[in-house]
Image 1 (spheres, rainbow, N blue to C red):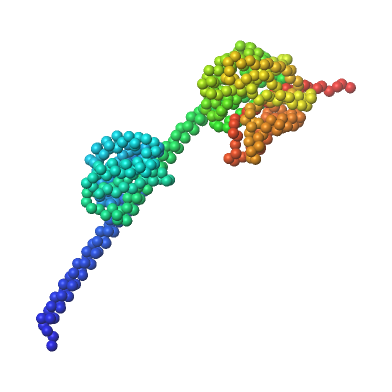
Image 2 (cartoon, helix red, strand yellow):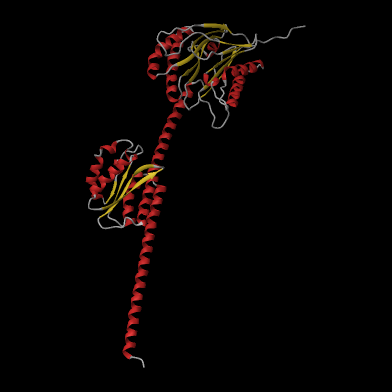
Length: 467
């Protein structure tokens, strides 16, 4: 026989059990829903930060988001970002904190931190500990967690999270979120450094392009027409702006073009020791001085003497010197007078002897010492003679094997092309063609500016004999 009271108690127990089970199930469902919503919200926050990282153009605006994002992700009172500049010093202008009412005293202490002004501050572990202790003292009533902002193995800053209540900062998910934000911050700072470098390079490139354009305008854009000779010239700068220089100057620029073509001309080639913008600026200065000296009509040795005196102070201050070969040519007599300030002697191919000689005269570098003396030589050029002026960037050009182009190779090629009866431009083109072939293509390039000027005396016309 079933006990009635026992049956009632069992039913009541079952109802209570079912009720508790339903309540637990609902609570678990609510908890899962809450966690899912929180996870979705966190994912949205991280996606927003990733989007900002991809599209930001203002680093300060990006860094302002970092402490706010940490507080939202971890659900805490506040966060502090202390970034370092590229040299490792504290980046005071970019200190960020949430809530902002926490910043005044702490920021004052960070600004007055003498060690933080030094380059490399953030690269030393003892300084990181010093920074952590300073922050911890400021938030002495808070629980604080800190993590490093690192990019490409370099400390880019510290990220702090703080709250008064007991937060499970040991929670793996919280640490992962904070570290993820720190890593993205490191990427942002590194990207900004790279952008700054790129912008600086672009500025330099623009300046170099302007300098190269100005210098290219200083070199003759075409060779003058001089009766009885052909001229061809070319400069290949190793950089956008170079230190090589050549020029053709009439000693009487006031004459008509026809009169100048049969008059006296100055031919000059030079090289400033060094490359790039400084060398180009010095050569530009020397060009102006030299053009003024040419008008004096003095012989080549006196021209170089005066030029040395004029340029000595500027060259001494710049710790640079100049090699220069100066010559003047009389179109009527075909007389060439020359003086040399330690430049590579031009090579003269004689059509009569079919041999090559160097045109040289004693003389020191321009800018080496005051009152330097220069010798003067002269020669009468003959029909068919070929004269090659060049800078040491030609003979010192490195080949793929490391061997230099050298003077011997240049002499051999000049002899070959002169014997073929080629014109001045053809000889110049073939010499540069051989130089380019020797140096190679691709990443291999000239280490120094390379310039060549070819002068060829016209052949005499031979009339057929009457029979």
